[in-house]
Image (cartoon, rainbow, N blue to C red; front, side):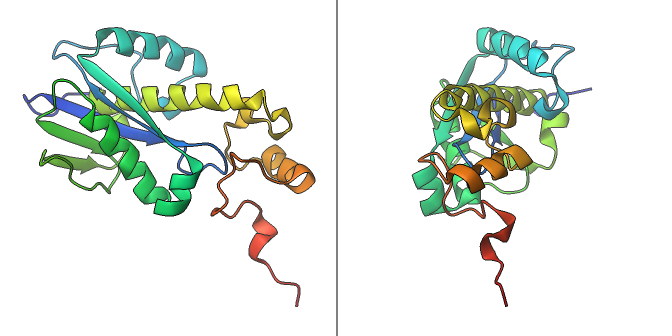
Length: 197
């Protein structure tokens, strides 16, 4: 059973796409009304694509405020993936109106923003409504972006794998090389750092 945390104006934030080889890392921040509940809502990884889409519409209609931020490949390269994920979450939080009084963060790392107190919750997307809502928005918005760029480079299978390191994706990198959407600072192929001695 997902719950609320404090009786404050409290947002949840989460990211999607940290482990991908291509595309942005995407974060969402969500302020839900006190009386919000939906029996479907859970950690986005435990939901079907159909249920995530259904929930995205409900959350976007009923949230007090929500924001979604993409951090793209060049910035991931510059910051590293952890700092890019945190930056995406911070930017989403800062765009909420009204500003939250407390931030619940999925995971174990965050950098304070705008003097708003926060708490990191490991597996928070399976414990708190507002983090679960943020996980659904981050995942669905990122998936939609990956489906969009799949039309440009269909050989990588992004419509299905969303940029994660699947066999199809890695084989396509071997065959066709990389694109402007690939994260060049990542180990794109297992053999990339191996030496023939």
